Image (cartoon, rainbow, N blue to C red; front, side, top):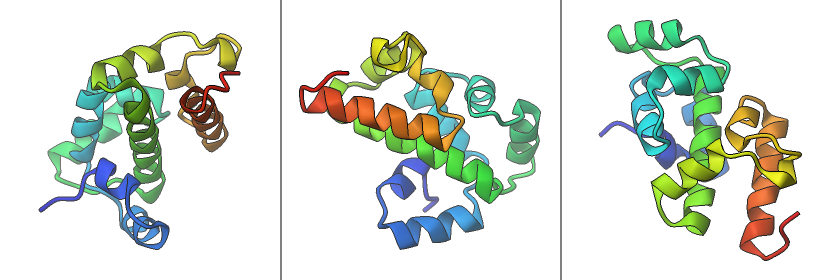
Amino acid sequence: MPITAFEVAEMPTAKAVEVIRAGLPARAFVGVAIALSLTVDELAAKLGVSPRTIRDQRKKLARLSSENTEKLVRIARIQHQARKIFSTDEAVSDWLMSPAPALEGAKPIDLLDTGLGAREIEAVLNGIAYGNVM
């Protein structure tokens, strides 16, 4: 059974790192894109990955680079955390696509191409979860 980015996001760290280093199949982009109500091309662009590269890799049934796998797992981890708060994939997608006052008006989705941006989004989600909205 193929491993999804969502499954990797919930693995113990050592196992997740092993999978990230090996790379997920490029088709893993599809499941994450669907959960976020994005096309694969839109998701790739938001993560700073060439949409053409992802299309080519999907066509060839290739694996993503470890860097691109890590980016995909990062957004899957954020989606999973946000799903616990907002309950539905649609609500998560709406939140990710809306300007957030706690992020100085930036849309959370626009910060997910970097580790620093993802950590800030995780902090905001923790604040929401625990009633400490920044």
